[in-house]
Image (cartoon, rainbow, N blue to C red; front, side, top):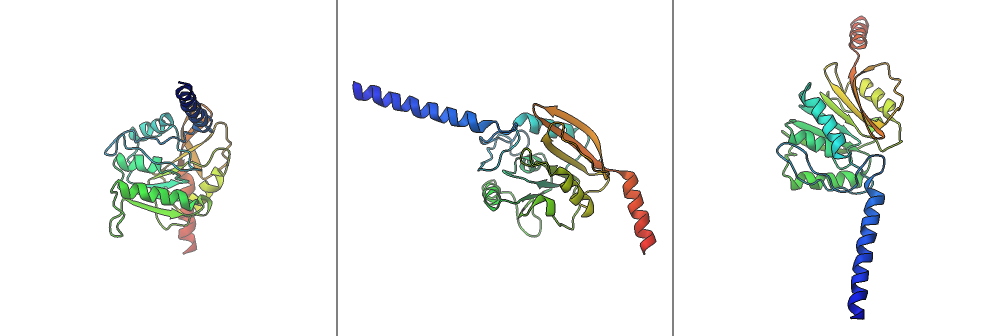
Length: 229
């Protein structure tokens, strides 16, 4: 009888420790470290494996992003910067995007994402890939491609969004029809002249900001290029 009580106490202690650990890790800057699920589309309800240090956005943040995009924008070619578990890019694929390029500077995170992509049978062949992954710092990305949708989800409090926006502009990763979605801490100051805010939604301590390239700046750049020829 005494042994049975001791075993029960141990089970309760283990359960309490697990709950306590999850409560500590579950919310860090409005992020959820437990495995999230795809919200909508062909991969709906599929669980996305997460490893540290990835902290995918909460489901309500992802809903804000994709509900907003669905009403005004078609995702075709997507760039997921600081992709972590890939929750944003995978959601885009689930909702019909033709191709997503995932970038993160953590090799173990990309390795985990590659396993998810393989497990979900997402095509990665050279001829017509739906998913590509690269290990790279988001502030130093150099790709000679243009994307209609770009996600930027930096780790909380890193505040390098302005540098990333500069990199997007200088490498022509976005055109005037592209939408750049940045999730960051609320009230973060953006001082980038090359982009304009078209929409902003706040949720808890986070802000989701939708940017577009300024058309005036794009016209000036094209005129300068003509003069240089």
